[in-house]
Length: 320
Image (cartoon, rainbow, N blue to C red; front, top):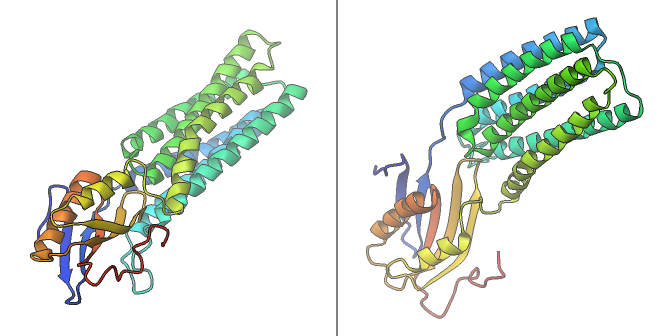
């Protein structure tokens, strides 16, 4: 079985009725299972420590941040679960396996982040109206620990930005680090200038705006993938033009490009090729090139001769 330099393998089949299919399968990216395990363990421990510290010091800020961190732990566990789902073998009913779970997890993580932002904004607005005293010392120590833990966890997911699911986990941890850093900064200011109780909610609003800016792209891309849009970074018009320029191809129709998961892309297309000689080699080379040029690892191509007019019912551009 031939392989390309990226680890893809391809199967070409001639079904004997004028249609041929080329299939490419791309393997999963680097496994982040260990990063998820370490990150979840560290953050669950920190949530417990932060909640206990909040109760002992009477700090509502620490308790609220513990609740926010707990939501991010749930996000981490959800992303980790999606990675495990993606490894499940296909079945007759679920022929793609459970790969789509990574897309649903990234979409849910984006939603969780925005809900967390809403909670931060709500609390900040409430505190503008009724400022509460803060015990700076314990708050600074606990929040500083949070900065270290969340930054370390985020760094473990830094190299996975090509995978939306991992990117969602990264943004959760980066957002937590930013919130904890903001808590440290606000507590230091209140410690140095006791009357400036407004700085705490003000910093919270700034952090919320930063999180929204970072989350918006994740939400947009996840929603696009969930609705089977072509992944960002792949230009459908460029793919169509390239297929149309393949040897012997006179027309391309019924072209679809969509995400099977946050790391795998599929394509189907009908190609009119009047002379179907050497179709197996044509399909094999086309599948290899689609993986190499466009990172499309799972193409299915149907070859048609176009004889007798245009018998394909899916040829019109307005037919899906």
